[in-house]
Image 1 (cartoon, rainbow, N blue to C red):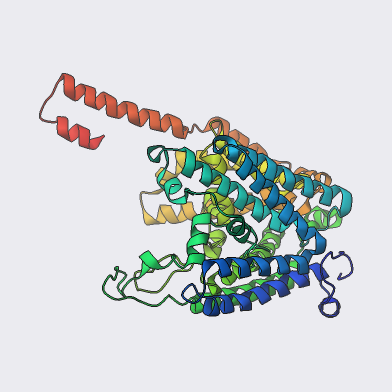
Image 2 (image 1 turned 180 degrees about the horizontal axis):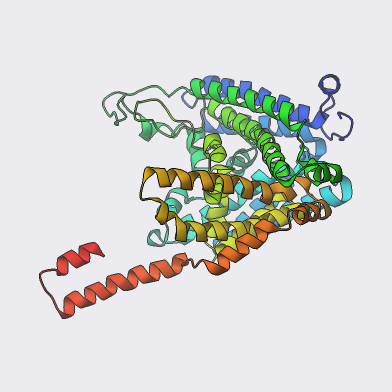
Length: 502
């Protein structure tokens, strides 16, 4: 297996790759992430903001990031610089009024060009570490920054949402700050995405300032505390990584997803066994992502990045840029709950640059953007088109059914069990093309299930009514205006009570 995938990066670890029988590019990736984890502790302790300047921290973080990129991807790492350079040129030489749109098109277009050439020119079907993975994270960072600069320099305060006010960037970043944000060693290989303001606050040592708390969780303005230690959280996350990797290597090898379309398997097993196998296969596949994202989170925490205040018992929280919540994923009782806890930073990016800004059908536009961002494999588009239908159906069911099961704890438990099972099946069914990649195998799988979930979801969307967010807001506004008009035309003793009720 180790020789099945070519590697564009360093061959220094080739002997280790042969011993453990894993592709060299994957070995390079894991070793570089472990090196980044150790380096992150050094960066926090010896290049602390109290000991060195932001300039030095930016330089070191950027150079180490380029080194890791070159080690993993060789000359393909130049694409990171080209993509970042093109976008920075757009930021500098175009008007702020339209800069965010041009950056979005240029950055996403360059990513798509690289993904198409990699898939259809070089190594179609090689589902392993590749240079477009880091470019996907850089794309998120560049486009987020472009919108944040636009919000900070073009929009008035009263026109910004509270989250947009916090994220708004009030001055153009220098080239060093920009490259450090995009290509620092903590996030160059696997992210996660973070806001520019949070990253600069971390580099300059301002990320802890408003968050010094007493042990009871209240702010302490009397006593200056030392920076909170991420050691406990880093150890927990590294242990989670080890367990996730072990589960993936042991179980997924025995239960690969590709078997669900094997003719012999389908002919020799009843449908309920095929359903159970699909669930186990997907359950064993997810730890691969748990490993990558949790290790990336641990690297940032070890460097001192990701602090998110304190718990009520006074212990520090290090989940500001976490990318997943494993228990919430595995016990999700709705499609939305699963998506909200899976690849969290990407979901926030999609929400901030697309869902909140798209004037027409933002749900479909968000899924389409997600498919384009993920890459050129047809299976991605099948997954996200299916995701649109499943999301709308799940929303319709929740809107029309859930309230009937809230009368007692027993009914609520029944509802939770049913929706958990339905959610897991819907996720497995939706994600299969994402794993199989090609059209033929994906259609074969859906045909073997008679497209049952597609048909069921379409039926639910057609039968169960759901009011759009805009309609709900208009009805609420109309209700308030009608109440106020009634109070003005016929005031009585109940007027104040009616206003409070509305």
